[in-house]
Amino acid sequence: DEIRTDLEKIGLKMKTRILNKNDFNQARGKGDFGLSASETWGSPYDPHSHVSAWEAEDNANYHALANLTVPASREELLEMIEDVLTEDDSGIRETKWQKVHECYHQQAVMLPLWGRRIVAIVNTKLEGHQRGHQQFDFPVHRLFPVSGDETTTVTISPGALTGR
Image: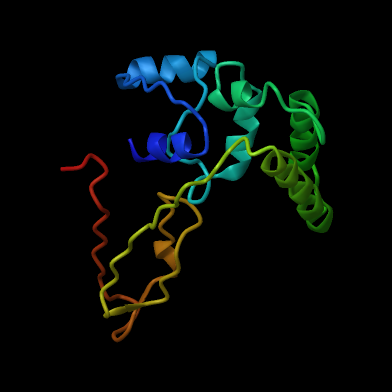
């Protein structure tokens, strides 16, 4: 209701449809929405896989990009993405990604509302912890015991993914 109230303040009338998960996914896959709020595939997910999926006609982003105009149509944006995904030179790739982001940001197609933190609890008996690049990336091979030799046993306990 807060998002709807805020949008109505700027003149956008919203018709809220509360759907179960299956119906929600079907509506997004068919483009049967005006505004759809969902969890982002931005960090900590893989952005390359995310934008690659925009070409699929059953992807909500494909439908959200349907009315793009200047600086690029949906087809032109998808061509830009295809081009950047096949670029080997990191400097050129960075420039091309910047153009892709500018293209859909200028048209306000996808609005990030907030992000997510990935929590890691590391015992003070270990050093070398670095965050992974994705949600389920735990680079435990970089950990080492603060004291002891290489035969020190360390127990790794991943968080429950089932919510139990």
